[in-house]
Image 1 (tube, rainbow, N blue to C red):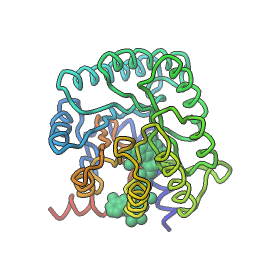
Image 2 (image 1 turned 180 degrees about the horizontal axis):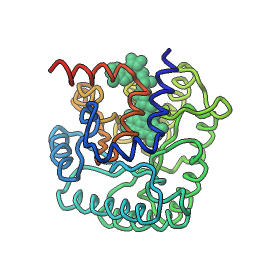
Image 3 (image 1 turned 60 degrees about the horizontal axis):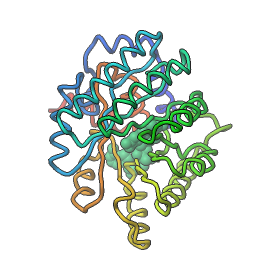
Length: 303
Ligand code: FDA
């Protein structure tokens, strides 16, 4: 049953027509619980509020199903505008991008040029750019683009998904790159990915511990309190400096834990999605945790 529900929401997230129409609807179905606003102005206040509590942020200007170069160019311009706002407002904040949003499926070199424009400006403002990891279909291409960009830029990193069999091997090759470690949000076949929670969790913990013992900064991105507690104990036992890592969670999820970890003195970063293109992101969150639907329904109907 859980798998069926997950497949249903993942299927909806991949539906281009629904994604396109949702942009015209404005927030519906309680999406505002997990998406901070539709424009830059609306998220600035959210970031300022977090910063005042010692929490940093990473902003994701949502965009899915980018079909041509002009759409990808617009996405790039919006991200550059976002960098300017972060700089002008002096926010403790970096930016997460998706390469498909910047034209990866249209033409790889065009996507690289867009990324270079973004990274030049980000470097000028001392802002880190994280490349989110998408479906496995884009995995090789994403690592390939990262590899090319890393020859010229140090302010760029990516995400490794612990559900992939090859994750540990790839992580080893990315020893010098700032990485966000996640479990993985898409439906992948058993040819490439673990299917059971136990295996995905075990791989996550092994890789997180390995990174914590290394020298490069790691973002440990999970809402899983069992994993966080195990890692906190490991960090203490091995006297690992808190400067070497941060915990990350998504906006709207387990907010009490964001504040709690920050109060305990851990670096904490909230991933904040915003923009009109909320549908696919929102459906993937429901796929991960159908109970989120209960929260949404409760907020919609009982408040
Ligand atoms: P998981 O869903 O495995 O839940 C584990 C346990 O934690 C649950 O059984 C429950 O006990 C508890 N729990 C979880 N959520 C809860 C809640 N809301 N309330 C109460 N209890 C809860 N994926 C990807 O493929 N590419 C990417 O680039 C990213 N980027 C990214 C950034 C950040 C900051 C995060 C946190 C996540 C991502 N992801 C992602 C998504 C990620 O791959 C994964 O799908 C989700 O984080 C869900 O896995 P978790 O480890 O959070 O908990």
